[in-house]
Length: 411
Ligand SMILES: *Cc1c(COP(=O)(O)O)cnc(C)c1O
Image 1 (spheres, helix red, strand yellow):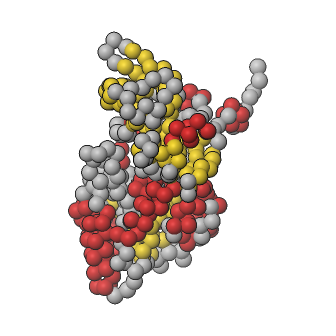
Image 2: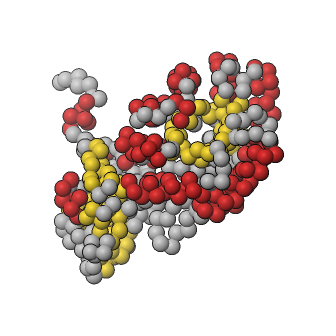
Image 3: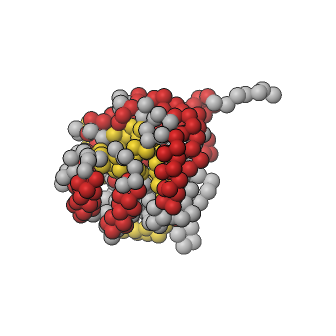
């Protein structure tokens, strides 16, 4: 995470942010590994009263192999949503048993490969489960259920409602039971992920009750509570109180295990919580453009690098690391893509001048992994800061990268 250090300059993981920008150029994604470590340890501590527990990092948030290795070092497992994510996790050194694969609507061939690789699988529809039973009746499998709770920060990330595309409705659990009875397929886990950005602990607890009810009907080895832990994007935001959640959910879980008379593995799968705060997108100011009513800071980045402000109306705090104590003025910080790609509107920021470097905060989750080559632009380089040292973990794209998948049919 980026912060103002005692020397009154912005630093990331103890390294001056302006120095990083100077050395690697902008635009640039920078990840502070110490933030990931402290978030992981905080979450793990919150659930420490549960004997058998597992945090599975939702790698779609940020999937660079060095970040995955960091997670492995911390003791995390992996939540993968595509077979390619499974492959990357294996490449990063995770054992198949440390990977849980929870895809949505993928073709059966992908699921067949996951079975062959020996990873844990959560199936998210009745039709896929029936097909799974026909093909792999001897492979225990988990199910993703839809609790019919609507929660989440934005309609696009609410995933648990009655019209949700995700999961098997809790109203179909009789059918799951019948299928299991008829085919001998063992349901070994129950999974739920109701959406992102839920701050209300009671929503999680209501979801947990539904999970326990479902779990009591099957010989489950794990219960996966998904994620949705909300982080703070600005000072006034409410964040999930993970300590309170840990206390209440752990108690409920331990009571359930005791009643069931066996040890069940507790799982959660945070993405954003672990990596959002760790990441900063450093961008350079190409121009400060005065329009009749608005001052635009035009930066060398855009929705091709960080789409959250445009796609989810997400607030990302922005600071001018080149002029941290300049006079506060209002700006529209805007990208260079031929779309209206504002990172911020009417935002008070310390005076911005041509050539300044701005830091867009909380860019660790769903930043680079959602980046594209739109406008035939390159995705930026990525750097991680660990123990006070910077390491390049991916280079920017090149024109050759853009052309590499194209087949030129000539004149
Ligand atoms: C995206 C996703 C997560 C992570 O959500 P966050 O809000 O980033 O914590 C967890 N589980 C599944 C199945 C997901 O698709």
